[in-house]
Length: 280
Ligand code: BGC
Image 1 (cartoon, rainbow, N blue to C red):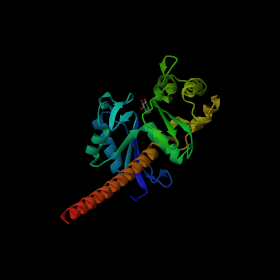
Image 2: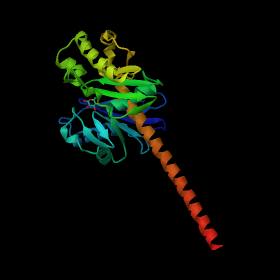
Image 3: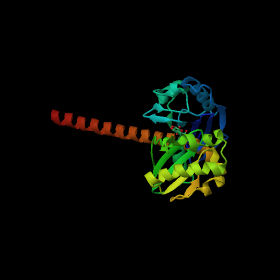
Image 4: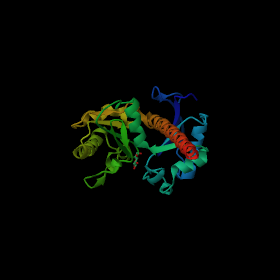
């Protein structure tokens, strides 16, 4: 795979998808490959499925691999994952993925990846100020992007509104489970986004997730202070964002390693000079 390609993997409640991403274009370089999420979605079963989708594209050792996960990942450790098997909590996902894939990967929360993707290449491209990116799917993913930086693990899909976890009434899964029309669902979304606006005052709201392809059926029904627009990368945002985040992480590490090597050389030169002076 060439230098501007990274591999993105999206672990979802129903499917695990992967595609190589052209980082210059922010688009898939090949068709994505999907397998159903194993049930129960235990770490062992999910890692095996990830290894399968990754091997499909034969990435080189240098190809960055970014993996999204539908839960909180704090310094590589899964802390909370309400829509996955409970055995994930406490697992160091970076370590187990490394074990199954035989190489380093970069993992991050799915909404964080989607927000990053939308900022780099999609609806929030280059936007300054506070952008709230929200994915409506099995759960509600949420992230703030501030001048291109994401604040990780903002679990605002679980904001309590009228005494209920927002995910229970405003996720796309709630619309399906409760058999709501788009009109009915829009009323729930209104409550959710109004509460977000009351507390956070975003400059722009971007709505993603699979249902965002039907955005004209519910977004125009919402009355908010900030403009609310559909995501542009739709369901691909996670894969694209994860691939870009992994490439960014690789560049950061390379830069750090170079700076460390340079500092070591300087240190050695200084020591040699001092030793030289001492013998004179
Ligand atoms: C999880 C989030 C995740 C979102 C979307 C929520 O239930 O708590 O971490 O980003 O679902 O998958």
